[in-house]
Image 1 (cartoon, protein in one colour):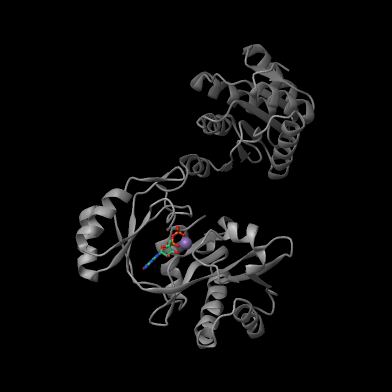
Image 2 (cartoon, rainbow, N blue to C red):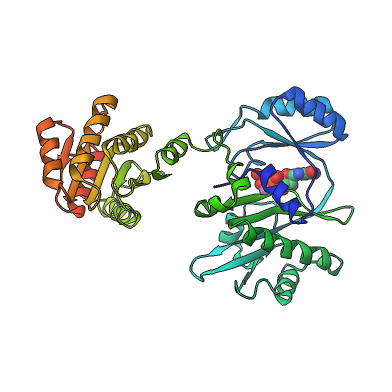
Length: 390
Ligand code: GDP
Ligand code: MN
């Protein structure tokens, strides 16, 4: 789960990281009132769950409350990378001398947390990493020992931080690591960590992602989930007990079991590449879980079909406690309701697979083809998505 900037900065503040004392507005009038109370200038910042807001015009400096009103009017309702802005953060404006980058995340390959710092803050860090990776200083953290003093010194000297800021930087780095671990975060990022003309160091922007599987032990974080701001399919999927992640491809995948779902995605992507279908591949990750009944299968199907990018559906079910006949009934239920125009390839094996296939054959839906192996199914789905009959 991703948190908004204002939520992340509230948490940072609880962990002793200096942040601007901002307030949220949902209307231009509210922005005006907050700006007047706060004293000008202020910064009006779009709260959407994506980066690059600055470049998209979602971060604006306002010299007067009237300007704050006008910026809020323009930013509220704006679309940034496909997400609509419903809230703006009004932060007191500050005078920046320089911008740093500081973040903690998990390095899956090293199987350790990683703390990273850069003097090239305020920019798109992925771009810095591509073009000048040497400008990012990295230290892996041994989770049993925690973040050590010498590692922070390595970061500070690696980014050529002036000595006078080392004490403040050290405290922020410690607190950010504590904030990361104690909240079961997968990312805690400050970009920029600004050095102000007044010489203070302050987290001007914040981004946190929390491990969904750990939310049960952080009820106060779970409550921060902004349903309005995340893709609606993901909200619906979670409500139905489905694991669903939206991706960019054209083939909707419906699978039971996370491992099988990932295999299905990999093979689909691979076959699309081998057939030379640039950009073709999985439109989603979807695990319907074990023992899904017809209603759950139908919900999953509706969610997949609500994505206009989906040009074909690949259904790969390995029946164990999930029964092929239940899956087939779910497919028919959803198919009759949604009446989709996209083709579907079905691979059913395992428990009650024959019964399932018989149900689908009896229904004789022209858009549905079946396959025996996963390779065959994926190839048929990729071709079907391109309008080529397999
Ligand atoms: P992002 O583009 O989504 O990462 O949004 P940020 O919160 O990082 O803001 C983008 C840029 O706006 C920052 O890198 C700063 O240069 C600038 N900015 C943000 N807050 C202030 C502020 O209080 N004063 C000034 N002068 N600039 C700010
Ligand atoms: Mn930023």
